[in-house]
Image 1 (cartoon, one colour):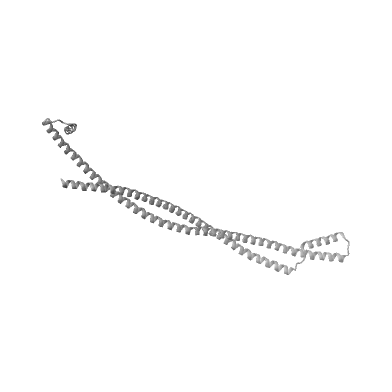
Image 2 (tube, rainbow, N blue to C red; image 1 turned 60 degrees about the horizontal axis):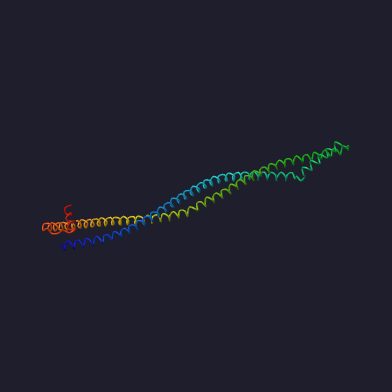
Length: 289
């Protein structure tokens, strides 16, 4: 009997201890769950930022590549105009040399308008004045000289028009070449800026990857700890349930034994015709049930 009581005392002590452990484990499990969820949400946030950064990098690369293609196309057009400028420069040089040679050879100093006016005046004199034949011949000779001079000036004028046309073509080609060169520089600078923006983006992505790795490891560790605490809690709850059931069964058994003893006592009183009290009557009725 003493051994049974000692064993029951040990079991009650164990039950009390397990209940305390269950209470602590529940608190620890709740804290572990909150930490695990906090790390999980942090991990999700970092992964969203990683996706956003990758998208930004992809966009920058596409813009940079498109600008690089445009630079290549602009360079091609610029080079074409540079080639035209070189060709026009050669033509212009040749024309300038022709003009210089012609002017040096002709030694033209008279204004074409003055020549034309002089010829008109002399022709008018011939038509309206009466003069000696010698004077008339001198005027006609002078008119021929001026007409020859006028013809030579006409050649120079044609050459000058040609020079002006070549110079205009040369200037336009050079202007176009400079315009495309300016566009090449602007577009290349913009492409370079896009490329330079990639470096901090790549560095940011690297840091985010490191954060992701750390948070993932912490989340896994907390998840494993949570699972261990949960298993330990379930194990302790199972033991508490088992011990509680044992004491419940034991208490029921003790009550039945006490009831049988009381019923036997009441039966003995009835046999001896002794007076029964209310407790005796209730115990007897319970025994019959």
